[in-house]
Length: 190
Image (cartoon, rainbow, N blue to C red):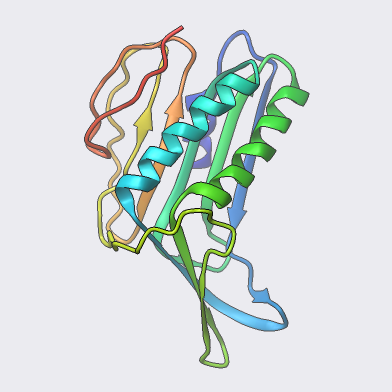
């Protein structure tokens, strides 16, 4: 995930703020040394829920552009697993929206985390998720990108072989377009 590219995706000339959240793999949890994380997702529902989160952000706050990315697969220590970026006229709006969006993502998007510890133990789960879907693994998938945009945009050229991204990108005015990262895009119209 390219933070600068995501930042550029959400920029809007009428906005004075781009608010972000970046979730990074840390090296410890509950007194145990973490070696790496692995994320698995039920892809169809994850994509649907990411679209829904962007729509709900638009209903609750006056924002211009939204991008949400979440990796699946292995995520080493220090690497980002989730990025949320939102542009808004004022910072308070964007910061509130980003805070709500990460909480909603953790509560509704069927993405499961497996932590690998130095002592050989493994912890797996997503206790916060309200969905009870059985896992359907989608490993080694190309990047996925949902987008809503001011103008049609070229598809994102970089494909990762080790990671899959569940993402949603939303602009206030746009045209629908297809992307190799996802079967279809989901624009919101003003």
